[in-house]
Image (cartoon, rainbow, N blue to C red; front, side, top):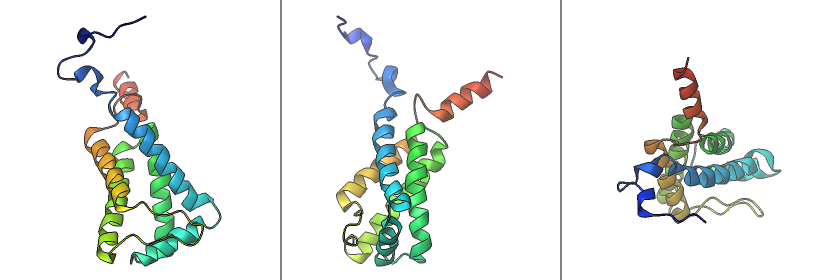
Length: 156
């Protein structure tokens, strides 16, 4: 049996700092892939997000439905893997910021089509936004494709 002592931790937390983004990357990445996947691959998913984008006043809602689905699915995959991290997180920051701003201007988040996947409410969207901004600013941490690529490049 191993007992964790105070010596196992560095006073300022640096020992585990590189691991800190991992739980957020996993949770946010999976959540975004699920919701983006619904928009891209589930029957009625694209129709629903196009409708919601139109209700929010987004120009070209049909095209933006594809863009939103791709940003969420592929950006979520990038966040999960720690790949193309500034792009993956940055695009999702902009995506959720757009939802927050357009929803506020509209006076609320619109309801989906019957049986459709709803958009996150303001409270949930703010949490997604905060997680994506935190990852964008702090980087992917350990076990990231980007970090492995940098180490491989440095060893050449």
